Length: 325
Image (cartoon, rainbow, N blue to C red; front, side, top):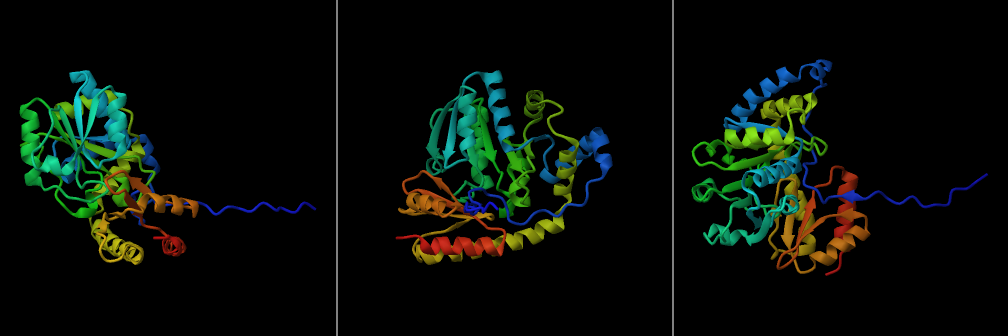
């Protein structure tokens, strides 16, 4: 008889993402959904306009799809553009715009808010800023959007993580002060595999983007999922409470290691902080089978997502306690 001597390695605990640990409760999807894309698409446009308070909303297959489509569209419309990424930011903005042959410049968010903006055609700003969770107010956004449009450029707001904040989206101000807003289903709803996001923009932009992504890019089940997301008002209120408690727990877990003097930023589905040891800690955690995210900065910013199960919470706590100063 053969005796199995190989040690089964414990699965990695991936906390590098930024998706809520509680999923949106979905009913069973009716089989009729597959046969009624036109009806679902029409219902989507009505409900999306109500939910976002924006006339033109385009559904795309995930936030990265929306970024790529915008980068290609701008190349078609304007040629190579100077794009300012307000740092820190989602790394796909840099990758996708460079791939479309745009010139990309990183610029600190503090300088943008002080009005020190380099010569450019596009500014991409996270709202809230990922991973520091800094929230830029609507009244700060409006003059920036106005200035860029007067110069023939665009402000793009990445609001993928806005849901957990409860703050008002800029989408409802697009008609008065044009800009482009991206929203996402997955983070707040805990549906990592949803691959569904929305572009809120002036009608001309949404129409042109539809030509970029194609009319069949979004499937009938995704139209159906969007409608469930729009209708989940009671669930959304409960999710706010759950996420607030999770962030408090996660911050308390790390506070033991960090001490009282290090600020911890709470991002609904994750916490983040700057610390001189973060680069080493990220490596040490990975060696212990736990993946977190490290962002380059003066002091590396570490972002740690919330575990789903008590077993994973216990595993993270033991690993954090084992980190050396």
